Length: 344
Length: 134
Image (cartoon, rainbow over all chains, first blue to last red; front, side):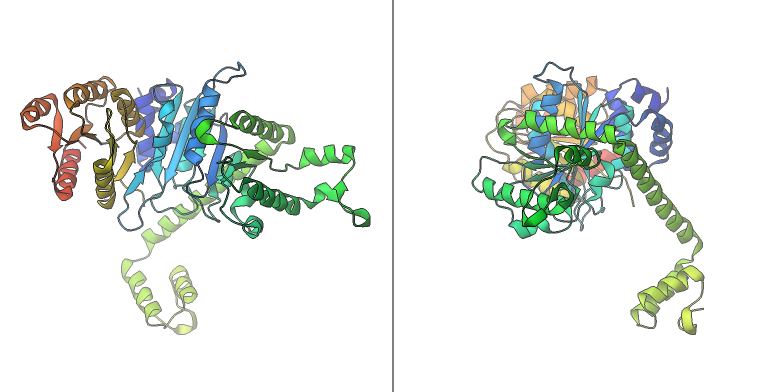
């Protein structure tokens, strides 16, 4: 029996081993993923990002608990969690601690949690995260939560991978100028204000609301200098093409605000499906993955053709300032140095 | 470039009150270039075996201070075997009386490290044990 058959049959150990093969980019991992790819595309991929210590893991824990036992009486969903933590840039080692907050999910075979280290990738995810998510999707998990590393301002890779991106904030992390900076807040489909029992929650929500209003000026018109909502019919039209990220307050450690957050996630999914954005995001995500593979394979092909000696000689010229970095790259790619400088 | 990393689950079964030692070990293994999955205090053997399976680890490090090791460790070993993870090497740290050591070793514990053990020795033994099963 092939690995992909055992994974499709629901063997959890086979799935765990496949995830390792994919993470290590082995031939077995690649070929199994090739076979499994046609079984992907059904899962709702939900990204969870935000600064360190805002409570991402606790929030994912609560969301998974909710989807496993919906109080509304809906059938439980199979939930997978991919939790990414950083690798040390010096030793390559990592401490992956997201499971600490997810102990309540233990013993439930409808949940699969996998921790992974970034292994040198920037952007908040690991290079193999997309592959792991595909394997879990093929294995039949209906909701896949992808928790990024503690993200600062520019770890926005998650928005390319997920259908729905939650950006988790907490009171006291910054003023309203932080809220209008480019980057992580821009990628939010839903803003989560966690630790909402802490002081400063009103100010934090005000700053986020202000950011949203500045960012979505089409939703408001200002005739005669007065700000008011556009007419109802127009608003409906606007809502069908536009999505204004809702802000949801939660206290993840106590499970407060979770039903409302789940409603927002479901609402966003509905919005994606009704507007055709689901397919557009799918296309963009796969294109992004294709581009990434093309770049890395082109680099690998090129590297196998250029001699180490020539590469080192060009590097030496660069170090001696005979070539600029751009000239050195041109020299290596074209096989000749510009302006006759450096090695031929 | 992707490469094979040693993945270790560091877990504290039972009712110990603190996890200082386990954190020191987790940090030392990290600095040795390993990927350490740390699950925190008060884990049942079932939780540990399940995490070891989902994370597909090469080794499990158990830290027990409470004296319950003769009940907890055999159960973890049994569950790992039942899950098909008999290749996973199990190491033990904490307060383990000398007279229990031969019994635990015969059950399949790959290494036992009491207070004062050198982290370098622990790293070395994990590397060797994982290399042998690879």
